Length: 403
Ligand code: HAM
Image 1 (tube, protein in one colour):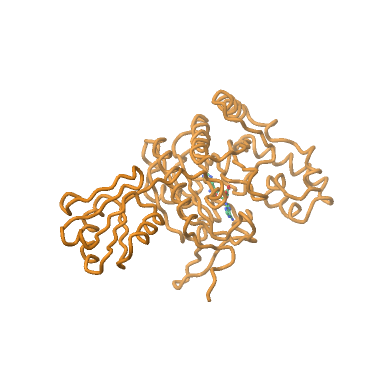
Image 2: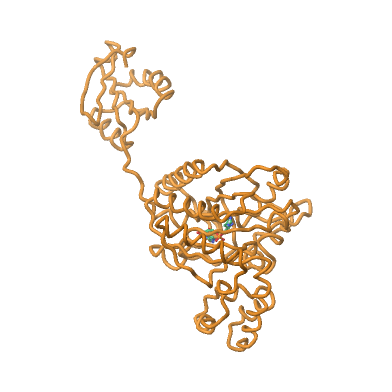
């Protein structure tokens, strides 16, 4: 027997119902906020992710499904959705259009991580990217949209927010931080030591407890923001307060992808174990430029579907459609004409074997049909069908034409 690869799984039965419900719910809400569907390829040039997610990020340096294709191109299975959407945005020259553009997408992402509960090598995201809006009102609107998605799915969450500043306030802060980190270098873990040179901001979200205790007194960017970033962050917190969306400011929230500036956020759940981030996102005003487009502010997020699949409160399933059965062999073929007609409007299950009454009733219940339609000896002779509404319990015998 051939098993799925480690960290990859099939989505079947009840899980696939849940998956579809999540996508349908999130899609309906994204559309209400003005987002249109975009689909980009799963395979992209490796350079795309190096330039966007960042060479020194764990995702690019350790976790890429990267290979040379038969034409000798350096390609990679997308580890996330934002880079491809931005590439597509620039490729279609949408950066030269004045209007704002908003896209939603969903699909598989690939990261060669160490698999554990909630951490897969192939997982699915639902994401949104909004282009052309520099106002922090858009950051607030996106956070509101995600909370409405989780509300509609019956999922509780904690929201963590931070500001990563901009090209004015981040560089002096970084310098300051490197100075602080260099002084405690000896006591920090090997990963942090490497990051001091490559990506010092990432030291802040190191999971090592010793490192975290040493970072308590580190300089905080939130206290060193420039006037504009500070004012935007204050506006965001006021808007969230007024909307009744609770949040926690986490000064160590830096996200694992390098393209963010200003607002960064994560939605976490306490009900799913250590891999608790169920959605993440933020502003990335420089990425379109990095990928050779015209400067275009942007903000977005992605939800991890597998992390919320068990948390979703599914709506009560109602009886639906028709179960068709024959009680004598000669009646079986009559069922197909009815099935084809009725399938134009509703779900139809056809039992191919002639069976007794009780057995059909059990079959109808199993597929959760609303109506059972049976043809027995009498019905066959009279050109009628026997119908029972399994909700109202009403039963009747009607002509084939009348049904
Ligand atoms: P991210 O935080 O890397 O952000 O991923 C978003 C979500 O995907 C996470 O919060 C988590 O729920 C889920 N996720 C990530 N890795 C795994 C994994 N190995 N197994 C299962 N679920 C996982 C991004 O990907 C950004 N592109 C989000 C964004 C969009 N920012 C702006 N626009």
